Image 1 (cartoon, rainbow, N blue to C red):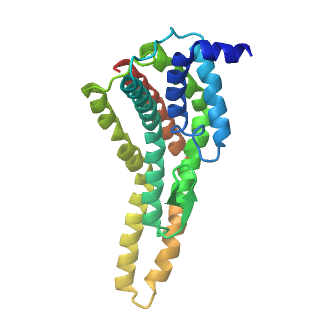
Image 2: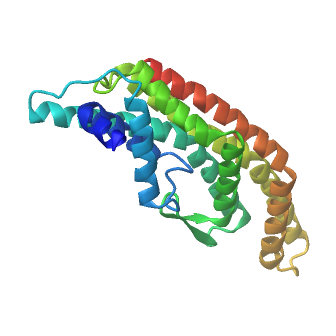
Image 3: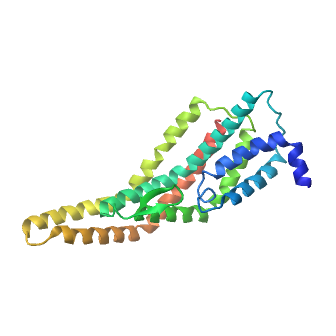
Length: 256
């Protein structure tokens, strides 16, 4: 009853805090996964919003409906943007798996990705799950809550306005998707290009061999071997990009 009374007394502040909180949680990895029930997301958002509302200066209600809708939209935009900045890393990792899978000849071996609601190659799904485990091992789910708190410290409720510097920062950081994809897929792609070149030479020198059948098995085995051998390097790269991502998210919040 005390919590209910507190929420009613601070209804305006609680509403704006809740909107930003749930906007971040539904987009970010782990907490925003489709595997997490909607009721749990809403309950967690309510708990966090109540906690943050108790330590945030109160905000007044706008004078008209247009002002209210504008503030709600800005809070949703701010929360979703922060969530997307965090999600860029996972998109890049899965993109690396897509490139590796196509190069290995597994382009048709797709599985359903419940996080993004799309079809993805098995290699992409595997690397995405690995990135998720690394993210949890680095306490990423707790850092999301810390980032949420930091966003209210630098940008109070109803105080966000998108500006040119923020848009430029988002566009600049989006390039990390291609950067991490190239770095993670490079060992597999380079190895398979060399193997395909060797198979092409063998096809010319020994035409009796069916290089299509032989090469298909060799490229899959070689690709899986390279992925297995490069697991420590893959983890190191993902950790480095996650550390960089948190710095970029903090920078984005500070310039808001």
